[in-house]
Image (cartoon, rainbow, N blue to C red; front, side, top):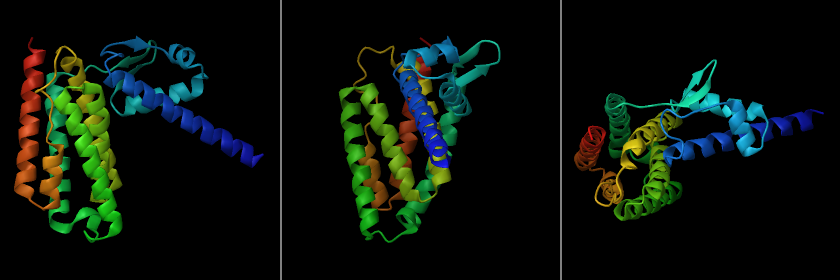
Length: 233
């Protein structure tokens, strides 16, 4: 009996995460647009599952700031304003700067830079950087978002503090959700998307904090200016 109950709990938890991931991807792809309303029943029918894991997934996404819960009308995709975006960028920058400070002064994850585990992790981050950079250069927003989130997730893991890494991931998801509703208006995104992921990795591996800070400052300023321009029409 305990084994069956445990297995059922694991299955529901996995399903809950899969639904949350799928809905998050729908929002990031622009298929679930800001302000869109839906119910637990609609999503459960769409995915052919019971209501319980769907409700749990939607509550998780609400806690992450992607959805808004309405007691009587279900859920709605959160509408971020330019002011929200500015605040997210500021918060994201503070977390990143703290992470950079540790990486630059103490090494990746407080471990020896020659540690094989660190070298393997750094190699993985560089691969994500190259993939994200290629997508950005090609103007492929959907592919870029996927690789960019993985890039920052893996870079954050090098910092060694999973709580800050998770917080940074949440901020990056929120910033993409906010930006997507404006970026999707452009027919050609080439030249508009940040593509200096590998430059950032190089600066951090050299512990060149001023250059790393400069790269991120330019990225944040350019991103904010673009979204403000698109939002103003």
